[in-house]
Amino acid sequence: MDFEKNTQLLDDLKKLIDDSIESKIAEFLKNIHSADLAEIANELSKDELLLVVKNLSYAKAARFVSELETDDRKDILENIMLDHLAFILEEMDTDDAADIL
Image 1: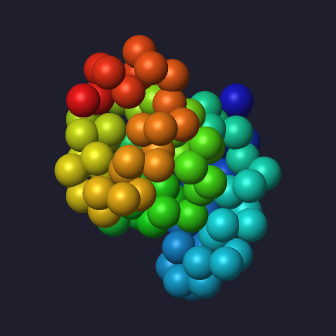
Image 2: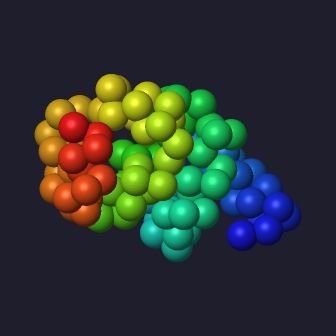
């Protein structure tokens, strides 16, 4: 993904987060590849990252978390509800889930 597209993705996502309309956030995130989300993750606050993960399907959240840098992954996993985390881990490749555990 190029810089301009990343910037637009980040701007659009932050606008939706600022508007606090989770249904629109979830709909927007359906159309974004998890690798593209991971590219902009370092521009999001911990709370924004948690909101993103909360609004992804479990399978997409698993792919997204797997793509994150270690510190971002740690922040998310330490602050996510255990039942949500369990479903995400269940969707991950066994190697990635083992690394996290």
